Image (tube, rainbow, N blue to C red; front, side):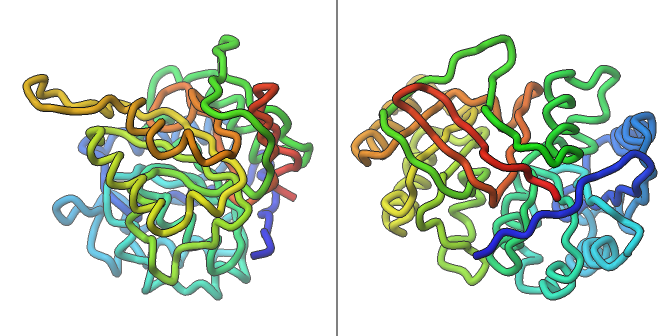
Length: 314
């Protein structure tokens, strides 16, 4: 699939805000996130159905889909930011007008449940998307993490190559397996990657660099998800693996027999004979490195660096 880069964001541009998965419990977080975007010099258009609820969904499928289509179809909207993850993005995949997205490539930002949309967009259109901060998760706080915002805004506003991924405060990257590998960065939330395997919305991972992160999955669930990638031949197709943060991925019931997360990861990945780097500050954390999906990345685990060798926007 040929990657399609969206145009860079400029001050004064219009950002569309949508909620294709769940709504936040506190709707004032959306308002605070919007104020943050406006304070940074951007205009904001909120989807008509943002703030609605249908149980764990942010409105019914048609409502959430309508906002998605509306923002891609609106020529004035230059970027689309998601309110939060949660659950529900995958329910939209077979209803989306991918031709509309192909004709109107735009910056599209989110992570967690939004992974399903990002992989589907890439599979169907080649659109480069961004696993980055969300309006009611990261941008609503009185003090947005400076590291997160610096990396994020630079990634979507600059046409210079992104370069080496650096953790904040010189925190080290760790090596699980040495070597060099390069390819297009693809992946996201492990549970969501697994959830769309075997569907028409799952892109080819052949010769890619796979990046994974997750939250709240017990080691046996991580085991099951990695086994799914193994059985689906994904792990053997990729040229390198990057592991972000796996937050709260342990069994809180200490009376249960379990393995550690590290044991599970080593079991599946250590003998693949490809470079693997972990402890990258990406995922469900406040200090979050924005990851662009669909652009070239060089992983040198022998020398301990990750280099994104092009820009993510045009």
